[in-house]
Image (cartoon, rainbow, N blue to C red; front, side, top):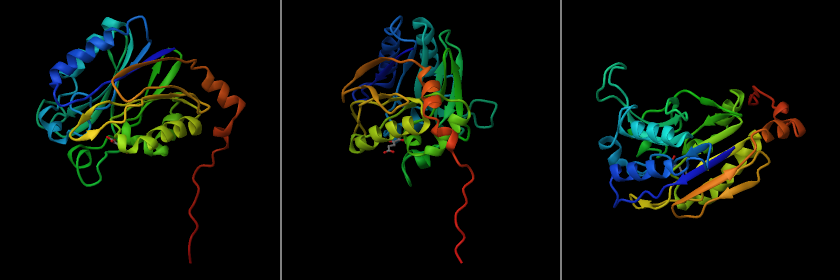
Length: 273
Ligand SMILES: O=C(O)CCC(=O)C(=O)O
């Protein structure tokens, strides 16, 4: 399987619509070069452009959905289109001013929506996404030819129990769009490798480049194999990182070093008297 992670530069000088057109062209360029294309988190606005989440929010099937569905089918690729600020319907049925979510979209090579994932762990503690957006509640996996993909978004990377849930649901390849800041780049690399090793899974983690809302982005998108080896890593600028990997290595790694079988579930904390 060949995957291309498109590490988009999110800078303030470019409008959302221009970036959408530019990114769709980058996806189309992957025709014949990749089976799976991955984009970063909230690349329309930037993950730290909190003021724009509301004004640039879209319904699930909004302009980014339309552009990415078409780009996926034009290129004939599976496309993890990163995430959008989704404005959910107000009453669950009609369009309106409902809550915001950080929602990832995955398209099949015919441009059908294969999965949507609302980010479960919201970043910002007492500000930003954590207060502006709602929390997703469901783990999401998608079956691709040759591998089951488990999806997670950015800050989710810090929560190993989410990934164990994905593994229990059959995930073999973990795809993580992000807008990770440069300030904590060491955590990004370390956590990507940790999630790969502990889950004996491929990790494809795609970040952004550039600076928006005053936050320099880490870039350094990374692909890690089930043994924890880094197969490919981007630099800090805009870049398409293409890698070839063999998804069957997940099964062989899990057979040859069957640590996942030794999990002890339901551990109890000691009672203190
Ligand atoms: O956990 C971090 O350090 C970064 C998380 C983040 O930027 C996000 O989830 O948008």
